[in-house]
Each structure stands twice: as structure tokens, then as C-alpha cells.
Length: 198
Image 1 (cartoon, one colour):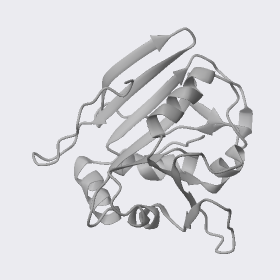
Image 2 (tube, rainbow, N blue to C red):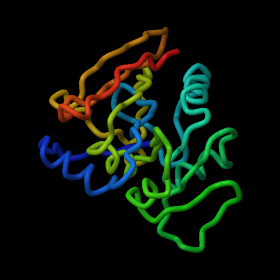
Image 3 (cartoon, one colour):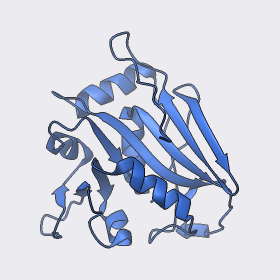
Image 4 (cartoon, rainbow, N blue to C red):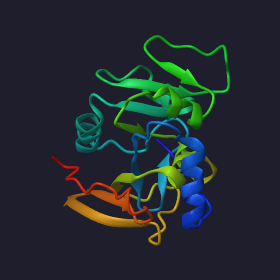
């Protein structure tokens, strides 16, 4: 999983971006990522740590839901994840893998989501950067490490406190599960505060 920095958008532009990307049915868009203290989420081939509790949390949280990921993220996993529908973003029209669907862009993937109530965006860096302006919720596992990867480092977008409110934190030795909900919502589109650690 991975990410890179994104520019801060106004609330109005964020709302416009969401309307541009999601048209009819609007599933809740959740970004889920494991992020080191220095913002690193990977090196382009995978995560530079092994935290079994985070892997279990990811499985428990996403089971039965739709996953959207970039091609590099899928390649780092190596196979479709059981019990979950997966859409892989790739511009290569000839790229195919058994058990997954493909889309050329995030808007197209959201169109393919159909009646899904919630979709999980799980990397990599560029996909996170595209999803952040339209996401409703962030599930971030803060990894208490500072991996030094130099030019290979893939970074998560900055979490702007003007747009995101931390609503839950469960701390363990070496990592923490943190939930953010978007602040900017109209009166008829309030985010749903739920316990992400059930």
C-alpha cells in the first residue's frame, strides 16, 4: 500500500469533485492504509514492515466489501483477496487477472461498484491521492516506525485537519488504529460515525 502528497482543496471543490466522480448511487468511500510515522506506506513493491494485527484488521474490516486498488498494489499482493470483490486500476487494456475486474480510472471503478454500500480504496500512492478529495472516511493504521527508503519511498497524502476529524483511536504497542471522518458535508449528507474496531 502506498500514497503521495495531494494539494489542499476547498470544501466547495471537494464537493464538486465528489459530484464529478460519483453520479447516481453513492457508496461510502473509505480509504484504508497502514502508514509509518514519516508518512511512508511502501516502497513500490510492498510494505516495509510486518504487523500481523494490522493484516487481521484489514481482513476483518474489508471482508465482504469491494476493494479498489492500483495495479502495483495488486501485484504486491499477488492474488485476489478471498471474500472480497476487487477492481484493479490500470491503463493497460490487455492486462487481466483471474478473479478481478479492471477499470481505467477511479471514476470508472466507482461506476462499476454498482449498488455497493461501501467501497474501500487500498492503495497505492497515486490512487490514495485521487481518492482523498472524495473519500468519506479514513481508516489509518499508524505504524510506529520510520523506514528510510530514500527515492523508493511511497507516501500517504497529508491528512488536513480542516477537512478530517479524528473520531476514534485504539493504541497498541507499535501501532494504532485511527479513524477520521470528513468534516465538510451538507446537512443532508452527514457522515455516519461508527465503531471501526468492532
